[in-house]
Image (cartoon, rainbow, N blue to C red; front, top):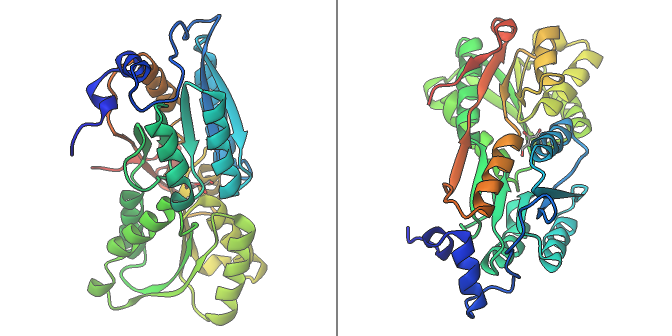
Length: 323
Ligand code: FRU
């Protein structure tokens, strides 16, 4: 893949070139990056209605607080891609020194991110991806790997036979697409003729939707042995629906995120059977932002490690997933 101008030249040089008529409309950040004149970092969060996103903002804010030479300006798009597009444009007009975005969906946010990036503002895309490669770096865990590990774990715990419900995250977002793809690969249905996915629904990452979808699944399926929800709120919603129907003891529940006070606590309490860690990347993102602002090279893709938590290993702090 050809190197971009940003990869070829460190930021100060790229900005100097911008002043010589290269394609940038961004004022040079010369003299910024001190406690008196901090670098301004815009952060567009797709929503703050879910515990994991609240944790991400907390992690970013805590990491940023250790660096007086940066100022973090956070906006909440309230789960609306158009609002989030407007954020990106506003941050561009304000001339922030760097944008961090955790986009709701890939397609509607691809172009605004690319425009800002091509105009000279570094962009870190966090957790959910955009299309193409017009951004500085992507930071996130490997959702395909998580899905595949979940599929293998589920096939194994069911002894290769059983009826499965898959409650998907928003399928216009990359983690939903990749967790689904990985899950099906991990289940290896062709090799397990006795395993069957009997109900699939897009619960859009939201617990109330998952609960409603699970009510439909239970109403139409006399037998359900396991639910894989693409996140822990989804798994918890499914559990609550099963409990209300008196069927929670017959079903295993598996989720993703593993926040200590959410998914991990559910495993410890016996509500979920397993959850996979999906780190927020807050600390890595701030560290990477500072490197970019100082003109250092950063990789195009920064992978965050994941872990499996089950009832057997939760007290030991979970188990790292191999490469
Ligand atoms: C929060 C969330 C997490 C999930 C992630 C995927 O909005 O739904 O639960 O792991 O987004 O992007």
